[in-house]
Length: 107
Image (tube, rainbow, N blue to C red):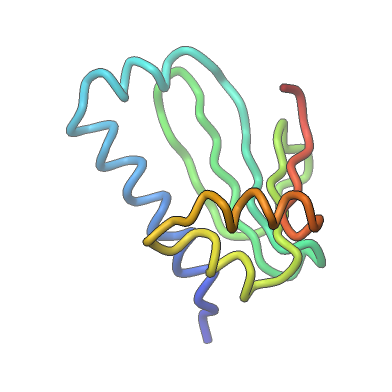
């Protein structure tokens, strides 16, 4: 059974790839940096990584061994709440303040 969070992450990978094909300016921005981004729950039970390399996007379910950046959510419910529209920026700020959303990696 797929979790709501894992479905959202899969959808995000498809949206990123579609947007890169559809919008040349976005595709150009993708070529600016090479990195791997991990999005996961804090307990590492659900996750998906995205690698951006030379303008190409690769994404797989699971936990990456050495991501450059990690975005972790306290749990699946909070992740789904923060990632589903309508996005409420105040909720995201509060989640960061309450350590429900954390980011690790270089600025």
